[in-house]
Image (cartoon, rainbow, N blue to C red; front, top):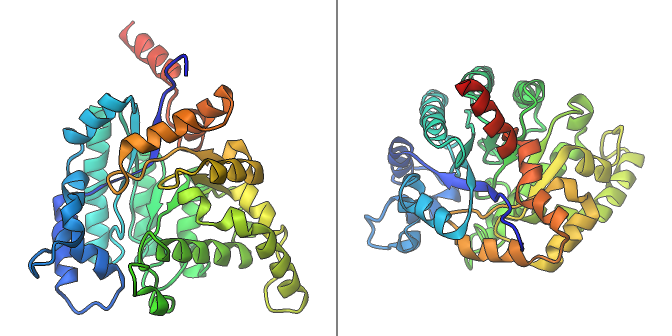
Length: 357
């Protein structure tokens, strides 16, 4: 490329010591959640099995302003859109989850204020308590000036098609704030065959989990109730763009025979209207080309998935992607600025100049 394009990476994980400590307690407790495999490897090495600890994920999650920024500088990555790493606060009881979500959002907002051109943030909330979640969502956007929300798929095996969580969706739509549905390990109803061969997490299980969540929302008619709601999913759309023709066809058949509720739009139309996807962890030019053709260039955003994925290959991938320079600018920053309300650099500079004068 002849000129530097602003690079905004849109699925970049962080954590805080207090959440890490509580997850360590969960690992040592009675939970049978499949999430314990990954969480144990990152947060608890007392068994002598280093697991994911050998990859230093915890160091990368807790360090935001030192090694991360240095790597970003070296690679020309301008901004990380930060989000509390999976499973977030969703394995805790409602009171602890609500308290930790507030703390994590305060810390995240502090980092964004210290580095306004380098970090933006997705707020977390505790869906275990929808009423309190809504209050925190409003505070995070209107008070802390964060850029959207992160949700780690199911909560105690329940999904956003359940009306008990609709106050959360109503709040996000009213705030014009996108919800990023990030993977976590499959719920108890899905986990059986996913427990072997490393299939529980990013190799297969995560996509199955989020894909299931997304299809449930579309097929349930959620977006007829919340037509302006925006949902972001990572990893080139968790295979949904590839499957959308068949999903649409089979859902239409299910509606006709009374096995699915009637919806105002087709599954494909909901995907194009209500969803955006990021490239996180999928550095495949054919997958990128297909996704752009299927759902439109306006709905695809670049991401790294740091620290779980290395930064350099993600930069190299987008620098060399077979797209026009105008499309590359959209993928690297334009779409992220629009979807997550991140001020373009020119706008930010003009505002700062006006404030000084």
